[in-house]
Length: 85
Image (tube, rainbow, N blue to C red; front, side, top):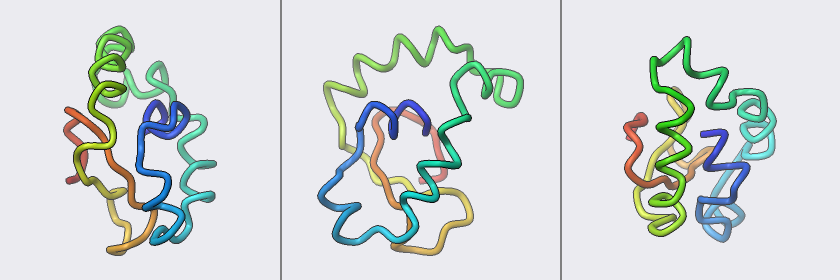
């Protein structure tokens, strides 16, 4: 999510119109870098770096919501990433 948010790979117009709490969400994921996530997920930062190109080419493509978020809150889109979709 850090990469998606920090690189703007989400539908900003949709988030502005329908998102609630996105600025808080953005602040939460700011420290959750690919390097931070590696021990938690086992997904190597290098794999995430390689996927950035395809994310940029297709973003925003797939609806995902933050785990535990209420429908319509902190909603973002991502491409080819197995999140809580």
